[in-house]
Image (cartoon, rainbow, N blue to C red; front, side, top):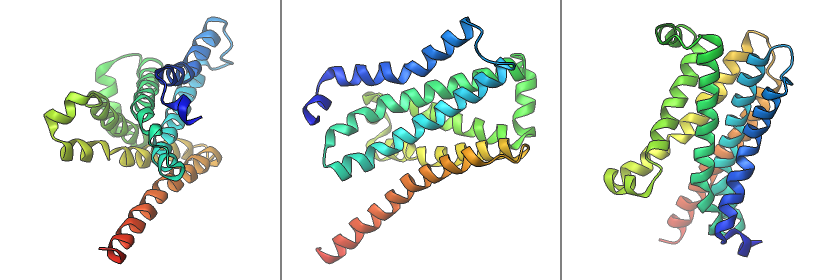
Length: 206
């Protein structure tokens, strides 16, 4: 297993697997299998896959630490870009189906509806991380500033859950929201615990 993770083909396999939901949505669209409300179906599906991809991004570090296999880290960038890809699709569905691609209406709508504002803020942070995901960006920004920027993925996780929660509040349906919130809380909570553990070990063994 560990040897397989080191092979270049592993990254390509991850990319293909990550694009399968998109391909399936395209197939469903072509075959008119999106149900009675295709626009709502696409908006919801792209949002779900954004959240799922985000969970996978945040799972990389715990998996790397707990398994002792540093090879997992090389998949973080690919998963991050897949998250951004589905976030762009989600935003595009909103802009096209909800707002008819009317830029003036979109700009007026963003601050008007809280859940749209939260989702757009998360998208802006993801955009900043996507644009600086290449190695040269580390040299341009400096390692410390680059790392600080990419730690905003934690803020994205919080904003994404709040976006989902606020959107479901109108229907009083929080079942899926609770599941995603629990998974992301566990992944973020592990990071807090791991940092505390490292600080404690450092004090015990200076």
